[in-house]
Length: 153
Image (cartoon, rainbow, N blue to C red; front, side):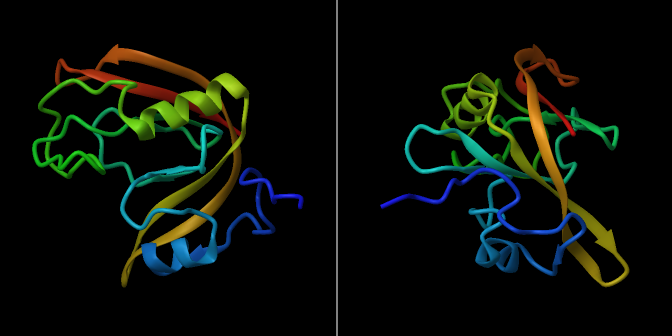
């Protein structure tokens, strides 16, 4: 039996939108209702990322994005990074950060979904396929180590 690849656009057109994280997950474009990094099964890496600009070190340049990994937030429950400010170091030991680094190492493309603040709330837009061109551990603005990734369309 041939398994469908978790990578690529999966038939979604750039610009496709979803009104909730649940709808995004149900569609199959991203596989986690909470986490920004959508891991694949096994050791293949990450197949998708939701860019919600909730980390102070995220930089969105349109065709290129500097994305902060998960973890190290004040209300981090160990799963999805929390919503507070950076309060401790991140590491590539976190399974989501490790998955995204694996995509960098394997040169596996990711689907990038942007969270957009609209007049009636947040919605999610598929922005296309990006390459993970960097995966570094650097010091972030708050002085803590962050896993930083660069995505380029």
